[in-house]
Length: 135
Image (tube, rainbow, N blue to C red; front, side, top):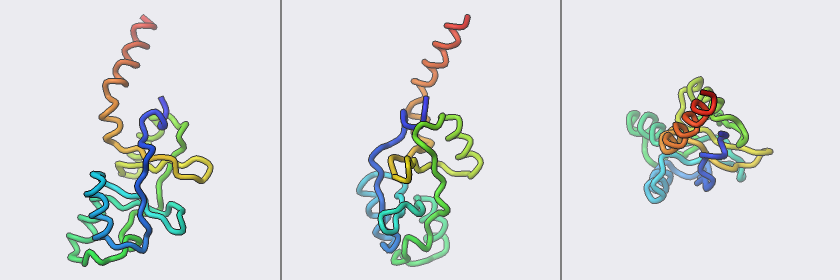
């Protein structure tokens, strides 16, 4: 299986000049835990619930702080045809829970740790199929 098999294709973005308060409201409205941050429509970073908690709330910064000041960067990306094992390796190496999926410089999706959990049964079925097939 590849990243494109489990990624979310509808990625919500926010301009880096918006405020963290606006980002938090957008995340709440869309019921998501992260936004890809853009500058001139180009992905440059990501802001997550963890970023807001650690860099705004824990440091008593105002929610009027610009997203670009607290976003995580550089943006860690992966290609849609990449193997899921490569995605896990990247996430583990960088200590992150989300990867932005880029294809030829274009934002095409996002894959999160929860996508692996949601697809766990599918993974087990595929694994079991290959085990039985080789037996």
